[in-house]
Image 1 (cartoon, one colour):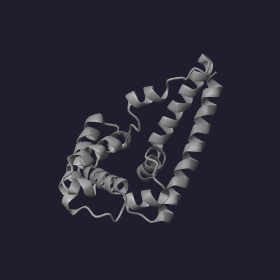
Image 2: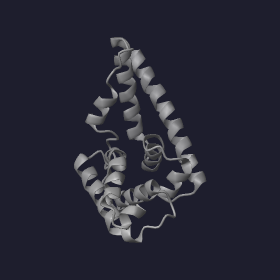
Image 3: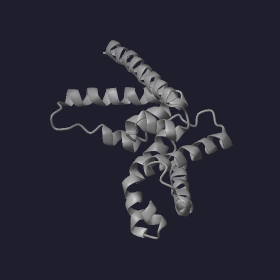
Image 4: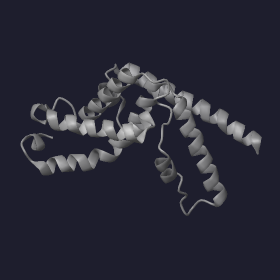
Length: 185
């Protein structure tokens, strides 16, 4: 980022290519709306460009980038206040990519894995917004609890609690839904 701030356009391209997939997925999974995700995604990069001259290395670039993204998401939620803005955690395209069976699975195992993936998806959708965001930043984007805390602007302990509650809720939800599937067989 410092190289880009100094005028190196190739540095920006490198940053963009490195972070574009994860950042876009973050917005899609938070909003469930590809068009809104695209708008927020573009606005994030626009803010990166605008802030480049004033960028300071007080945090990792990735943390700074996701903090901008988080703030844009919060601003959007405050502006529209919809009841079900966060209804879809994953895009159908992303879901189908994750459900492709490898050669080592039999058709039965592949089908079972697909069912488990859909169960997990539906359980993630049920998480409270703050837990879902923390879970996605931690598991999808790979941030540490400290990194997530910095991005969302809460204490490390609050972040750890959110991750713990999300994991506990997901485990319980998936187990319950899996039992329902077994009972239907």
